[in-house]
Length: 427
Image 1 (cartoon, rainbow, N blue to C red):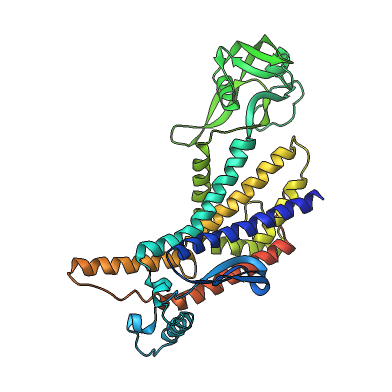
Image 2 (image 1 turned 90 degrees about the vertical axis):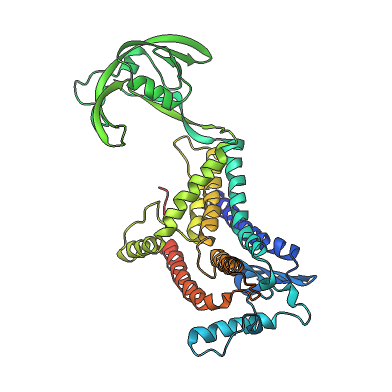
């Protein structure tokens, strides 16, 4: 039941994100007078639709995107002074202009999208991706500020039996007793100060331990009462990063404790930086998207298990959301699962933002580039003392849009197939 709830939540948020993305395009377009003939969520055959005013609103079978049909998306042949095409690319552009012109009702040429000023075109195109960015900020705000982020705290989770050196994970015969255990620290104790240094986070506690040696006073809180213990800190060799980030081996303090994780509410101003970091990381993934999709296909064809950091389709995201809702153990409660799910859905919206900003048609970034090119041409004409009245012939980018669409369609099918036969598993 929990798995189904997780999948349903993911599907609803994904569809809402797609729907709001298109609303982001539609609202300013209508505000600027452009006639919007269709608003659709999904692709393929129509499941349901209703016409209100001059716009048909509907749902389609395949929930892999959506669109709003802005009338007059491409300028007419007359507007750009087009000549008879002699190449396939030219004919494709001419067909796009003709199809766009057919949607313009008599006497409504002024309501065509191509008639908008460059700033207004940019507002319409930017508004869709920015809407997804806003959704991501809201979801991360709920997770970080409303619930809290999983954070290592100064509360003790486990106490080691012995001093573990190097890469040891178990106690060797005759190993010295861990300083924390010898001092009487227990799981659940909250460390208030270490060797006179007040601590409230694990980073502070860890730094205090690493920088101490010999017998040091440690103030703990246990069952609501504070007491002071004396820990005889051992010295062990650990690999740390130097000032340049290079790994070096140094002797540091060792107590033999691990931190407990808890949900800690973050300040509101941390949300934008977290979303910005997600966007930066996503941009890095998008830059090598073809390679990552190829790796997923290679792993699936060869029977290898996919890693948790591979790219996924909507099918994979839904599966991960379902597994997140049912994962148990290791202190993972309902609140933690909710935070993880919100983080996944926020990351999806950041991905929609970054992906749509790729400067290639038919993505929003491609239309943004076309509008900027038109604006640049007009500005150059002004500098040269000329008046340019003709819009840029953005239909000439249609052949590029076909190629990009085919490329993304192939990658999308590969990812959906891989998410079905070789899914990412959390455990």
